[in-house]
Length: 351
Image 1 (cartoon, rainbow, N blue to C red):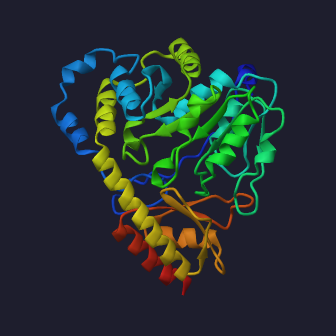
Image 2 (cartoon, helix red, strand yellow):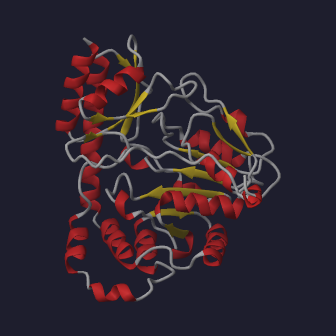
């Protein structure tokens, strides 16, 4: 090994869901929205003046920040935007998790959290979910350097109550508490109103799921003006021009089309509830999901086997061969037609 390799920062990277090039795949593995973005996004792309690409984008992402502030009834100073919620959370880790005390997050959760902790040399401790995959709030009432968890959780889809979340925030006045609400628009109630009560609460959301814009990479955080200022200070110390101009404009238009947003999220919710019934009829068990996916295991058949058999039929779902969850698959909610194809394939496999 070369001597310079002794100074390499080594981490085990996050493994994203597979992105197959075959367009004939039924892709239910990365929680993408099966419907297109708001119609105004297409109009912007069709009419964008490419000569504007020679200019740097607005570093403050003002048009998008203002649209989000108006939509969520906040001041622009309470909104931070980044290149996907992954970028936002990474920036938040760098900004707020600088204590010698470990940060806390669940043992079964978004698998990027421990990667960021390792990259930034942040000590961390995972708190085991209960058998029903719910959080035990008492695990988060210990000395810590910060807290983060998704609500609904991923990959389980379990939604925690606002009372429980507030209990954790109230018990940690000396730590920043981050709630990752990537899936909140599919039936949950956001804890956003609590930011007026607790200046240490950061609420993080994304355009990748409910707004059908995973390919444009837009995430945002909402919190007290003090929290957002600290994040912007770090951002502008690293890279001022993180979000391109056309993404800012498209994101703002998507936020303004509330009617379309409600129509598509409602369609996914209806398909999810239909899918729960079909999966139960096929012998699957799962925690009650309030997201755009279902975390399902079969009573008699191994999830790894079902996963591979679905792949042979060009249906992709997500599977992790990890402790506690190695007999579950995460199934993204697609269109009704895509879900019916899934159920037909499962009937064949389970015979």
